[in-house]
Image 1: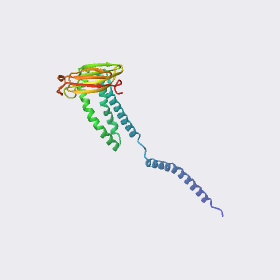
Image 2: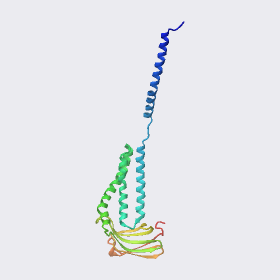
Image 3: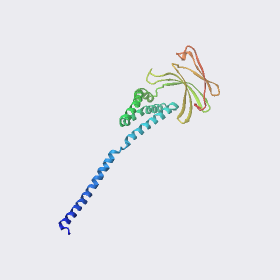
Image 4: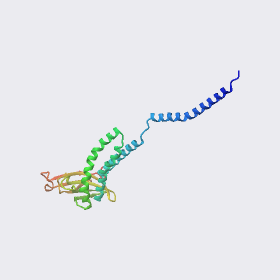
Length: 237
């Protein structure tokens, strides 16, 4: 039995229509599936990780600068003031990356950052009003009471006061120094006497120094002060 020509034409038209529908539906379906997959898979935040790295870098810089302030000094007082100001400014650079973190990392970063800011900002204001003007005006804030030289290091006894008035330490400090570069030396604080204003040093043996502070130069003791210190050639070893 032969099929009618009309049925053949109809079947061909249906096949062509199905092919066209399949061709147009396939890209859209693929795009929908890809979009759904992208929405379902979490994408890590590169910005958040970069902010964390920024904060870690600032913390490492602050620790390194603190260690340098404890062990190194410039011979020029203005450079010491500038370095201390830069050290106190480091927490300010952490405010912006801390605020750009997500909720809980942001809270943790701000909890750690707030005490640093509470210390550094008032200290910066004090330096801006006292230390920096005194450094520019070459105000004498220390007076050498005695120094001794042995080998590659020296021992210094000096009276020191804080810039800006009565707030801060005012007394006699005993330091051991060793030069490492022109204008830069390692320093070790041996002792400090709050309220003292006079004193003298003398050698009593190899790497051994004697300190004497008279009664008139030390208002917090009722007798003359004498002490002996054993020193190390490289200050710390």
